[in-house]
Length: 400
Image 1 (cartoon, one colour):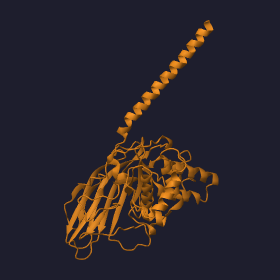
Image 2 (cartoon, one colour):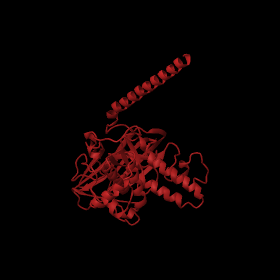
Image 3 (cartoon, one colour):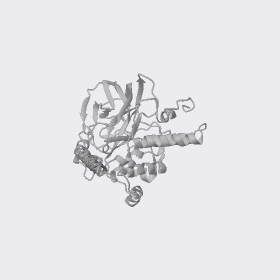
Image 4 (spheres, helix red, strand yellow):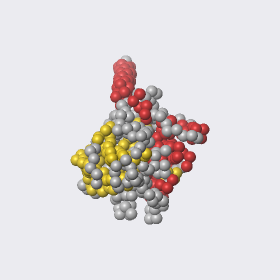
């Protein structure tokens, strides 16, 4: 009898524990459901882990040469924002040789801010100089695709981030997308399949780049540079049901072209997550062709680079400047812009052509940037320094 009572007590305890566990699970799920609307905010701050801040002193100028007899030269210089990933301060502007007053304006769709300069009857080149400091953190989201939530109805504020850039080859594009979703699985897996497809099918090529984040160009030509890679991935992400955006910024170290873009996708509960497909692809090729690494080391580093990409990563040597595509400038230009890389300029209402100083085949430029960066400490370049992929292996061999 005593043994029976003991068994009954144990059974009752198990039932109570299961019931309590169910209540706790229900409460947790209800809390998660109640928190979801709060995290479905288009202006949700980055939810990444911040580390290793670097303060960069930036001296950025642009030299613009209007055509002969130009009556009105207009220049829009985008201003990097301050947020949880970067703090911009001590900003100052100057113009030479003609002095003009600047106007600060913000476009309403993505919140991009611009310093606007208007020169009347300019004679010869005009120089705009922007000096400032920027404290930039490294960001890591540590994203797990299995934990990304599927959203049936996005709030209306996400609409600008859900309209895919048109691709003329609709049938081929749909067939490609079907490859990403045919196996089912977590809601976000299709986006990472799209990243894999782009890595295997696109070739980095400045000479064959659109300079305009053109998904159509990337899909048909299978060539381009960072904006083509990220525009195509953003378009695929939108077609798969996730808000995405192309983000342009400055690489804060010496290079021919200071501009570089990334892609961000809004993946609940992680919010906006940054991905860099083109730099990761170039890094993978560098590893694969390395002459002193063993095959085992190459496999390890390539896997580490791919994992870093898919988990969401942004380095402390890149400064975000603009977000989004296809918007009206502020003040308005003669037409909407696709993207703004470093500046946008018009002479008598006609856009001046975009330069690409990293393209060895280009010889003529309507304008050119001049830039210098000074950091308060040494920092690594994660897409060049192999040691950043294996922190426990800091040997000089990995840094070659």
